[in-house]
Length: 480
Image (cartoon, rainbow, N blue to C red; front, side, top):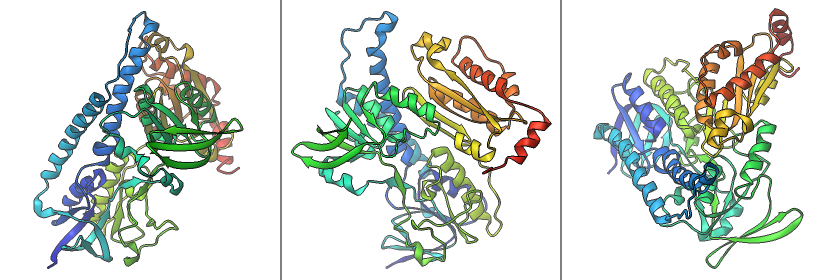
């Protein structure tokens, strides 16, 4: 017997975007239903941001202990208790998940359904085997899952994803990491610092989200001092063997085979939309089966369906998922009135060491927006005062500004305290502050932020200001 439900708004997905969408839709609609296919709780709390940072915290503690000698501190032995490290990761992770679940429990039971949802038509959802929901408006917030290229499946039982790492009972002896993106860099470096032999393989030359060639060069050089990282590896084969996995690859023109306990696939994530039967709706889909949508309203075409969070495969970050969930939920609740939502300046951080941060426009976007009408300021942290004091004097910050207006446009950084400096820069970019005005802000001494001031001074010195340059910049628009 199928239970029939009527709703003004149905939200598919109980993660960050879905829960925010539910709350916002409930402000404008009487009956809102939240549907979760597996288990309530966010990707961030369960298998993403929080457990990875717990592992990184342990790895950093071990790293600092090993390198205490530079300060005159002698430690004769740094032992890694793998089971204890992973037990703390899980214990604290479960605490974070518990906090998320408490917020879910505050949602009335009558508004929560569990089961995989799929469209029967544009206004009807079948939820598992027992429920059918008829909804005036629908928000898709189904999140994402690990994407594994087919050739890696040859690793068989030795193939793991980031979801699996936190369930290990002990640290392995060795891991091959495929994918030097955000997840690969964070987990790969953490495992290496915890005593695991790590080798990292990439395709296409990318290192995390870095777009600036000079910063990528320094980052690649730095990571390779801790573990081998080839961002454009020539891998010939992957095969499961007794007790491990063999990787055959070409290094410096020579073929070699290396054995590892596990192969960690950190090869990105894919949106969970392929099981929704979107073809039962009239939504326009792209070549990958993704609905076309407006990133300012989250509306799919001109329909009553909205999409938010990792499900739209746009900006897979928790704060972006929350913002998108809010926009989608508000517009679904108000529909047919649809409003443009507030989108913040792009901000992303990789919690490697040194950290990576990107803010505002990338160097390519700055170039596309106004060719020849921008400048780059930089600071090398190798001789920056507070960084040398801390023994963290490695990295590069490059900041971008516009000729004529003097506006700060964006930045990339590989260096110490990037997570904090990136916030200052993102706030400045969102407020459309001029570089000269940023330099008028207070800078304490001695702090790492003085390095930011050095980069801004360099940029400000190079910028040409005034109406003549503004007119020139308007003339040399995109593509000129």
